[in-house]
Length: 208
Image 1 (cartoon, helix red, strand yellow):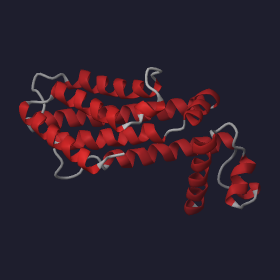
Image 2 (spheres, helix red, strand yellow):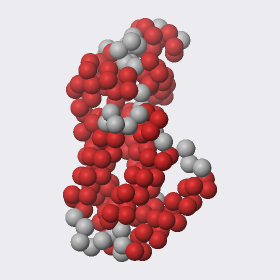
Image 3 (cartoon, one colour):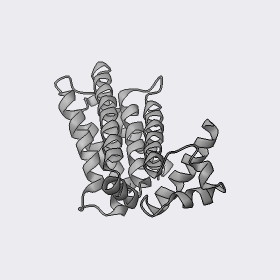
């Protein structure tokens, strides 16, 4: 049963990300899966339930990806790079139509996914800032609570800011400027040295 539901959610995500949520009917989902609508309703009560399960699946996947940013042996600078890569890919892969439909037609699900993502991101950034202080990579006089909120606010606002085009806010250049802006503002000399080495490695890898 779980495997079947996963197949449904994978296909649903594919359709939602490509066409948005509003235009995709239960008939569309069933047809794309080559199953009857009756079979589909064995796993979800209605479209609202399907959208809810889609959101729960997104939350679970993002949680796993964030958790993987904190690997054994990583210092705080390496962690924040991994988190920033995660956030950059998240913004790049999002379909504005999907976000719009979720916010307009399923606000209860939209609010839950935004609040959960925001809370978890805040906690992970806060943990990173505390780790950086202990490692001597971040300034001791830095207020980690304020910085965590600033990081989260800046990251979220870039996506919804009309000053940046889609090409700009998904570009490698914006990614490197954001991470440099963030780390240089809170790092010690030791931290900045590690930052510069990380940036050079990124350039040689031609990150996209």
